Amino acid sequence: MENSITKLLRGTRIFYKLLNSKITGKRIPLVTNILVTNRCNLNCFYCFPQVHGRKVRELTTKEILDVIDESKKLGAEVIILLGGEPLLREDIGIIIDHVKKRGLLCEVITNGYFVEKWIDYLKKVDSICISIDGDEKGNDKNRCPGSYKVTVRALKLARQNGIFTRIHAVLTKYTINEKSIDHLVNLCRELDTVATFAQPSEHTKHKAFNVSDKEFKKAFTKILEYKRKGYPIGNSEDALKYIIKWPFPYDTIFKKGKTPKDFKPIKCQRKNLTCYIDTSGVVYPCAFLWEKCNITKINFLEKGFKEAWDSLDSFDCESCGVLTDMDLNLLLQLNLGALINTGKYYIKDSLFKFKRRFKRNKHEEA
Image (cartoon, rainbow, N blue to C red; front, side, top):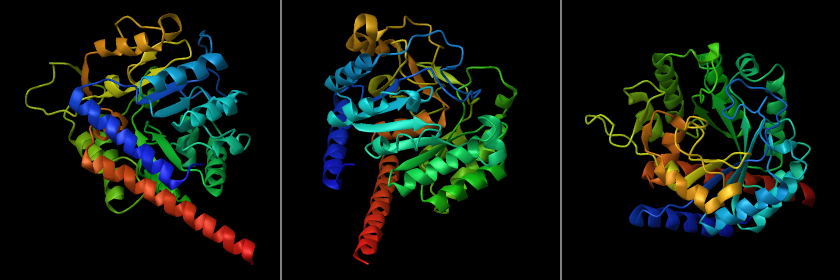
Protein backbone atom coordinates (compact mmCIF):
# COMPACT_ATOMS: atom_id res chain seq x y z
CA MET A 1 0.00 0.00 0.00
CA GLU A 2 1.12 3.52 -0.72
CA ASN A 3 1.49 6.35 1.74
CA SER A 4 -0.94 9.27 1.88
CA ILE A 5 1.44 11.72 0.17
CA THR A 6 1.86 9.43 -2.85
CA LYS A 7 -1.92 9.02 -3.12
CA LEU A 8 -2.45 12.76 -2.80
CA LEU A 9 0.03 13.44 -5.61
CA ARG A 10 -1.64 10.84 -7.80
CA GLY A 11 -5.07 12.32 -7.04
CA THR A 12 -3.75 15.74 -8.08
CA ARG A 13 -2.45 14.24 -11.34
CA ILE A 14 -5.83 12.64 -12.09
CA PHE A 15 -7.61 15.92 -11.37
CA TYR A 16 -5.25 17.75 -13.74
CA LYS A 17 -5.87 15.21 -16.52
CA LEU A 18 -9.64 15.47 -16.09
CA LEU A 19 -9.46 19.25 -16.13
CA ASN A 20 -7.23 19.23 -19.20
CA SER A 21 -9.60 16.83 -20.99
CA LYS A 22 -12.57 19.01 -20.10
CA ILE A 23 -10.89 22.14 -21.45
CA THR A 24 -9.19 20.69 -24.54
CA GLY A 25 -11.50 17.76 -25.38
CA LYS A 26 -8.51 15.41 -25.41
CA ARG A 27 -9.47 11.74 -25.09
CA ILE A 28 -7.46 9.59 -22.67
CA PRO A 29 -8.20 6.05 -21.34
CA LEU A 30 -8.00 7.33 -17.77
CA VAL A 31 -9.84 4.29 -16.38
CA THR A 32 -8.95 1.07 -18.23
CA ASN A 33 -10.94 -2.05 -17.33
CA ILE A 34 -9.29 -5.32 -18.38
CA LEU A 35 -11.15 -8.63 -18.45
CA VAL A 36 -8.29 -10.92 -17.58
CA THR A 37 -10.23 -14.19 -17.76
CA ASN A 38 -13.43 -15.82 -19.05
CA ARG A 39 -13.33 -18.39 -16.28
CA CYS A 40 -15.54 -18.15 -13.22
CA ASN A 41 -16.55 -20.56 -10.49
CA LEU A 42 -20.03 -18.96 -10.42
CA ASN A 43 -22.61 -18.53 -13.17
CA CYS A 44 -24.50 -15.32 -12.39
CA PHE A 45 -27.31 -14.75 -14.88
CA TYR A 46 -26.64 -11.01 -15.06
CA CYS A 47 -22.91 -11.30 -15.89
CA PHE A 48 -22.43 -8.81 -18.74
CA PRO A 49 -19.70 -10.74 -20.62
CA GLN A 50 -21.60 -14.03 -20.09
CA VAL A 51 -18.32 -15.85 -19.58
CA HIS A 52 -19.77 -19.35 -19.26
CA GLY A 53 -19.85 -21.05 -22.63
CA ARG A 54 -17.86 -18.35 -24.42
CA LYS A 55 -15.51 -19.68 -27.06
CA VAL A 56 -13.07 -16.79 -26.74
CA ARG A 57 -9.36 -17.04 -26.10
CA GLU A 58 -7.83 -15.51 -22.99
CA LEU A 59 -5.13 -12.89 -23.00
CA THR A 60 -1.65 -14.11 -22.16
CA THR A 61 0.34 -12.61 -19.31
CA LYS A 62 2.50 -10.68 -21.77
CA GLU A 63 -0.52 -9.31 -23.66
CA ILE A 64 -2.04 -8.04 -20.41
CA LEU A 65 1.21 -6.45 -19.22
CA ASP A 66 1.74 -4.87 -22.65
CA VAL A 67 -1.76 -3.36 -22.81
CA ILE A 68 -1.31 -1.94 -19.30
CA ASP A 69 1.87 -0.23 -20.54
CA GLU A 70 0.17 1.00 -23.73
CA SER A 71 -2.80 2.43 -21.82
CA LYS A 72 -0.45 4.19 -19.41
CA LYS A 73 1.35 5.81 -22.37
CA LEU A 74 -2.01 7.18 -23.52
CA GLY A 75 -2.78 8.60 -20.07
CA ALA A 76 -4.30 5.82 -17.96
CA GLU A 77 -4.24 6.32 -14.19
CA VAL A 78 -6.57 3.54 -13.04
CA ILE A 79 -6.49 -0.14 -14.01
CA ILE A 80 -9.44 -2.31 -13.00
CA LEU A 81 -8.97 -6.08 -13.21
CA LEU A 82 -12.11 -8.13 -13.66
CA GLY A 83 -13.49 -11.18 -15.45
CA GLY A 84 -14.90 -13.78 -15.02
CA GLU A 85 -13.19 -14.19 -11.71
CA PRO A 86 -9.75 -12.55 -11.98
CA LEU A 87 -8.37 -14.39 -8.97
CA LEU A 88 -8.61 -17.65 -10.90
CA ARG A 89 -5.56 -16.59 -12.90
CA GLU A 90 -2.38 -18.05 -11.41
CA ASP A 91 -0.46 -15.01 -12.67
CA ILE A 92 -2.76 -12.46 -11.03
CA GLY A 93 0.02 -11.53 -8.58
CA ILE A 94 2.35 -10.74 -11.49
CA ILE A 95 -0.35 -8.56 -13.07
CA ILE A 96 -1.07 -6.68 -9.82
CA ASP A 97 2.64 -6.08 -9.23
CA HIS A 98 3.03 -4.75 -12.79
CA VAL A 99 0.15 -2.28 -12.36
CA LYS A 100 1.59 -0.97 -9.10
CA LYS A 101 5.17 -0.76 -10.45
CA ARG A 102 3.81 1.47 -13.22
CA GLY A 103 2.47 3.87 -10.57
CA LEU A 104 -1.19 3.22 -11.39
CA LEU A 105 -4.22 2.82 -9.16
CA CYS A 106 -5.42 -0.78 -9.13
CA GLU A 107 -8.83 -2.21 -8.28
CA VAL A 108 -9.77 -5.90 -8.41
CA ILE A 109 -13.41 -6.92 -8.84
CA THR A 110 -14.00 -10.35 -7.32
CA ASN A 111 -16.71 -12.70 -6.09
CA GLY A 112 -14.68 -13.22 -2.90
CA TYR A 113 -14.03 -16.95 -3.15
CA PHE A 114 -10.25 -16.61 -3.55
CA VAL A 115 -9.51 -13.52 -1.46
CA GLU A 116 -7.77 -15.55 1.25
CA LYS A 117 -5.53 -17.29 -1.30
CA TRP A 118 -4.33 -13.99 -2.78
CA ILE A 119 -4.52 -11.80 0.34
CA ASP A 120 -0.82 -10.86 0.26
CA TYR A 121 -1.18 -9.47 -3.26
CA LEU A 122 -4.55 -7.87 -2.58
CA LYS A 123 -2.91 -5.88 0.22
CA LYS A 124 -0.97 -4.09 -2.55
CA VAL A 125 -4.02 -2.90 -4.51
CA ASP A 126 -5.83 0.35 -3.86
CA SER A 127 -9.26 -1.24 -3.55
CA ILE A 128 -11.20 -4.40 -4.12
CA CYS A 129 -14.84 -4.69 -5.06
CA ILE A 130 -16.71 -7.72 -3.73
CA SER A 131 -20.08 -8.63 -5.22
CA ILE A 132 -22.81 -9.00 -2.59
CA ASP A 133 -26.30 -8.26 -3.84
CA GLY A 134 -28.43 -8.21 -0.69
CA ASP A 135 -29.48 -10.45 2.16
CA GLU A 136 -28.52 -14.13 2.06
CA LYS A 137 -31.70 -15.29 0.34
CA GLY A 138 -31.67 -12.64 -2.39
CA ASN A 139 -27.92 -12.76 -2.95
CA ASP A 140 -27.84 -16.54 -3.30
CA LYS A 141 -30.69 -16.43 -5.82
CA ASN A 142 -28.78 -13.84 -7.83
CA ARG A 143 -25.42 -15.57 -7.65
CA CYS A 144 -25.40 -19.14 -6.31
CA PRO A 145 -26.35 -21.06 -3.15
CA GLY A 146 -23.82 -20.49 -0.38
CA SER A 147 -22.16 -17.48 -2.01
CA TYR A 148 -23.38 -15.01 0.62
CA LYS A 149 -21.48 -16.65 3.49
CA VAL A 150 -18.31 -16.90 1.39
CA THR A 151 -18.40 -13.26 0.32
CA VAL A 152 -19.08 -11.95 3.83
CA ARG A 153 -16.07 -13.91 5.12
CA ALA A 154 -13.97 -12.44 2.29
CA LEU A 155 -15.20 -8.95 3.11
CA LYS A 156 -14.28 -9.34 6.78
CA LEU A 157 -10.84 -10.70 5.87
CA ALA A 158 -10.17 -7.79 3.51
CA ARG A 159 -11.12 -5.23 6.16
CA GLN A 160 -9.02 -7.03 8.79
CA ASN A 161 -6.07 -6.59 6.45
CA GLY A 162 -6.75 -2.89 5.92
CA ILE A 163 -7.83 -3.21 2.28
CA PHE A 164 -10.25 -0.55 1.07
CA THR A 165 -13.26 -2.62 0.06
CA ARG A 166 -16.58 -1.76 -1.46
CA ILE A 167 -19.62 -3.96 -1.96
CA HIS A 168 -21.30 -3.79 -5.35
CA ALA A 169 -24.95 -4.86 -5.42
CA VAL A 170 -27.00 -5.63 -8.52
CA LEU A 171 -30.72 -4.93 -8.18
CA THR A 172 -32.89 -7.69 -9.66
CA LYS A 173 -36.32 -9.05 -8.81
CA TYR A 174 -34.63 -10.99 -6.00
CA THR A 175 -32.75 -8.10 -4.38
CA ILE A 176 -34.72 -4.92 -5.07
CA ASN A 177 -36.95 -5.42 -2.01
CA GLU A 178 -36.55 -3.28 1.12
CA LYS A 179 -35.43 -6.23 3.25
CA SER A 180 -32.44 -6.89 0.99
CA ILE A 181 -31.44 -3.23 0.75
CA ASP A 182 -31.88 -2.72 4.53
CA HIS A 183 -29.67 -5.72 5.22
CA LEU A 184 -26.90 -4.61 2.88
CA VAL A 185 -26.58 -1.03 4.13
CA ASN A 186 -26.52 -2.24 7.74
CA LEU A 187 -23.90 -4.86 6.88
CA CYS A 188 -21.73 -2.12 5.38
CA ARG A 189 -22.13 0.03 8.47
CA GLU A 190 -21.25 -2.93 10.71
CA LEU A 191 -18.11 -3.84 8.71
CA ASP A 192 -17.05 -0.24 8.03
CA THR A 193 -17.23 -0.50 4.26
CA VAL A 194 -19.28 1.11 1.49
CA ALA A 195 -22.00 -0.12 -0.88
CA THR A 196 -22.73 0.86 -4.46
CA PHE A 197 -25.94 -0.19 -6.20
CA ALA A 198 -26.66 -0.72 -9.88
CA GLN A 199 -29.19 -2.02 -12.35
CA PRO A 200 -28.11 -5.16 -14.21
CA SER A 201 -26.72 -5.01 -17.74
CA GLU A 202 -29.36 -7.17 -19.39
CA HIS A 203 -27.47 -9.47 -21.72
CA THR A 204 -29.69 -12.52 -21.18
CA LYS A 205 -33.41 -13.20 -20.94
CA HIS A 206 -34.12 -14.04 -17.31
CA LYS A 207 -37.25 -13.67 -15.21
CA ALA A 208 -35.29 -11.79 -12.53
CA PHE A 209 -34.87 -8.89 -14.99
CA ASN A 210 -38.62 -8.33 -14.85
CA VAL A 211 -38.34 -5.22 -12.69
CA SER A 212 -40.57 -2.23 -13.39
CA ASP A 213 -39.32 1.36 -13.57
CA LYS A 214 -41.59 2.07 -10.56
CA GLU A 215 -39.76 -0.61 -8.54
CA PHE A 216 -36.38 0.86 -9.52
CA LYS A 217 -37.47 4.37 -8.51
CA LYS A 218 -38.73 3.08 -5.16
CA ALA A 219 -35.42 1.31 -4.51
CA PHE A 220 -33.32 4.32 -5.56
CA THR A 221 -35.43 6.55 -3.30
CA LYS A 222 -34.85 4.17 -0.38
CA ILE A 223 -31.09 4.15 -1.04
CA LEU A 224 -31.03 7.97 -1.20
CA GLU A 225 -32.87 8.14 2.15
CA TYR A 226 -30.24 5.90 3.69
CA LYS A 227 -27.44 8.03 2.26
CA ARG A 228 -28.96 11.19 3.71
CA LYS A 229 -29.10 9.46 7.10
CA GLY A 230 -25.35 8.90 6.93
CA TYR A 231 -25.23 5.27 5.87
CA PRO A 232 -22.15 4.28 3.80
CA ILE A 233 -23.67 4.49 0.31
CA GLY A 234 -21.02 4.99 -2.37
CA ASN A 235 -23.41 6.29 -5.02
CA SER A 236 -23.42 10.09 -4.98
CA GLU A 237 -26.51 12.02 -3.94
CA ASP A 238 -26.54 13.90 -7.27
CA ALA A 239 -26.54 10.64 -9.25
CA LEU A 240 -29.32 9.15 -7.12
CA LYS A 241 -31.49 12.27 -7.45
CA TYR A 242 -30.90 12.30 -11.21
CA ILE A 243 -31.77 8.62 -11.66
CA ILE A 244 -34.95 8.96 -9.57
CA LYS A 245 -36.12 11.78 -11.86
CA TRP A 246 -35.09 9.90 -15.05
CA PRO A 247 -38.37 10.13 -17.06
CA PHE A 248 -37.70 7.29 -19.51
CA PRO A 249 -37.40 3.49 -19.29
CA TYR A 250 -34.15 2.66 -17.53
CA ASP A 251 -32.79 0.72 -20.50
CA THR A 252 -33.05 3.81 -22.74
CA ILE A 253 -29.87 4.92 -24.51
CA PHE A 254 -29.94 8.29 -26.25
CA LYS A 255 -27.69 8.83 -29.22
CA LYS A 256 -26.09 12.17 -29.97
CA GLY A 257 -28.66 14.73 -31.05
CA LYS A 258 -31.61 12.47 -30.18
CA THR A 259 -32.15 13.50 -26.56
CA PRO A 260 -35.57 15.18 -26.05
CA LYS A 261 -35.25 18.96 -25.95
CA ASP A 262 -37.13 19.25 -22.65
CA PHE A 263 -34.66 17.01 -20.82
CA LYS A 264 -31.14 17.96 -19.75
CA PRO A 265 -29.05 14.77 -19.55
CA ILE A 266 -25.79 14.03 -17.80
CA LYS A 267 -23.70 13.59 -20.92
CA CYS A 268 -21.69 10.41 -21.18
CA GLN A 269 -17.90 10.68 -20.98
CA ARG A 270 -17.25 6.95 -21.24
CA LYS A 271 -15.81 6.86 -24.75
CA ASN A 272 -13.58 9.84 -23.92
CA LEU A 273 -12.14 8.69 -20.60
CA THR A 274 -12.78 4.98 -20.00
CA CYS A 275 -12.73 1.65 -21.79
CA TYR A 276 -13.28 -2.09 -21.32
CA ILE A 277 -10.91 -4.59 -22.90
CA ASP A 278 -12.36 -8.03 -23.59
CA THR A 279 -10.31 -11.22 -23.29
CA SER A 280 -10.58 -11.45 -27.09
CA GLY A 281 -8.86 -8.05 -27.42
CA VAL A 282 -11.96 -6.11 -28.52
CA VAL A 283 -12.29 -2.70 -26.84
CA TYR A 284 -15.63 -1.23 -25.67
CA PRO A 285 -16.52 2.09 -23.98
CA CYS A 286 -18.67 0.53 -21.22
CA ALA A 287 -20.24 -2.66 -19.88
CA PHE A 288 -23.76 -1.61 -20.84
CA LEU A 289 -22.87 -1.65 -24.56
CA TRP A 290 -21.18 -5.06 -24.34
CA GLU A 291 -21.95 -7.00 -27.54
CA LYS A 292 -24.62 -4.41 -28.40
CA CYS A 293 -22.45 -2.38 -30.76
CA ASN A 294 -23.31 -2.08 -34.43
CA ILE A 295 -20.09 -0.32 -35.35
CA THR A 296 -16.87 -2.02 -36.39
CA LYS A 297 -15.15 -3.54 -33.37
CA ILE A 298 -11.42 -2.94 -33.22
CA ASN A 299 -9.20 -5.58 -31.65
CA PHE A 300 -6.08 -4.23 -29.97
CA LEU A 301 -4.27 -7.53 -30.59
CA GLU A 302 -4.59 -6.90 -34.33
CA LYS A 303 -4.44 -3.11 -34.62
CA GLY A 304 -2.70 -2.02 -31.43
CA PHE A 305 -4.30 -0.44 -28.39
CA LYS A 306 -4.07 3.15 -29.67
CA GLU A 307 -6.09 2.41 -32.80
CA ALA A 308 -8.63 0.44 -30.78
CA TRP A 309 -8.91 3.31 -28.29
CA ASP A 310 -9.22 5.91 -31.06
CA SER A 311 -12.05 3.87 -32.64
CA LEU A 312 -14.27 4.44 -29.59
CA ASP A 313 -14.66 8.07 -30.66
CA SER A 314 -17.13 6.89 -33.30
CA PHE A 315 -19.64 5.75 -30.66
CA ASP A 316 -22.55 8.18 -30.69
CA CYS A 317 -24.08 7.56 -27.25
CA GLU A 318 -24.93 10.74 -25.36
CA SER A 319 -26.74 9.58 -22.22
CA CYS A 320 -28.44 6.63 -20.54
CA GLY A 321 -30.29 5.68 -17.36
CA VAL A 322 -27.62 3.54 -15.69
CA LEU A 323 -26.89 4.61 -12.11
CA THR A 324 -23.24 3.55 -11.99
CA ASP A 325 -22.56 5.36 -15.25
CA MET A 326 -24.17 8.52 -13.88
CA ASP A 327 -21.91 8.36 -10.83
CA LEU A 328 -18.80 7.93 -12.96
CA ASN A 329 -19.82 10.57 -15.48
CA LEU A 330 -20.39 13.14 -12.75
CA LEU A 331 -16.95 12.37 -11.36
CA LEU A 332 -15.33 12.57 -14.81
CA GLN A 333 -17.00 15.96 -15.32
CA LEU A 334 -15.55 17.18 -12.00
CA ASN A 335 -18.97 17.59 -10.44
CA LEU A 336 -18.38 19.06 -6.97
CA GLY A 337 -20.83 16.74 -5.22
CA ALA A 338 -19.28 13.65 -6.82
CA LEU A 339 -15.76 14.82 -5.92
CA ILE A 340 -16.76 15.43 -2.29
CA ASN A 341 -18.50 12.05 -2.18
CA THR A 342 -15.35 10.25 -3.39
CA GLY A 343 -13.08 12.28 -1.12
CA LYS A 344 -15.21 11.48 1.90
CA TYR A 345 -14.65 7.75 1.52
CA TYR A 346 -10.93 8.20 0.89
CA ILE A 347 -10.64 10.17 4.14
CA LYS A 348 -12.79 7.64 5.98
CA ASP A 349 -10.60 4.78 4.81
CA SER A 350 -7.42 6.65 5.78
CA LEU A 351 -8.83 7.09 9.30
CA PHE A 352 -9.74 3.39 9.37
CA LYS A 353 -6.14 2.44 8.52
CA PHE A 354 -4.79 4.92 11.09
CA LYS A 355 -6.95 3.38 13.83
CA ARG A 356 -5.79 -0.12 12.86
CA ARG A 357 -2.11 0.91 13.04
CA PHE A 358 -2.66 2.67 16.36
CA LYS A 359 -4.35 -0.40 17.90
CA ARG A 360 -1.65 -2.70 16.55
CA ASN A 361 1.17 -0.54 17.90
CA LYS A 362 -0.56 -0.26 21.27
CA HIS A 363 -0.96 -4.03 21.39
CA GLU A 364 2.72 -4.60 20.51
CA GLU A 365 3.84 -2.16 23.22
CA ALA A 366 1.73 -4.04 25.79
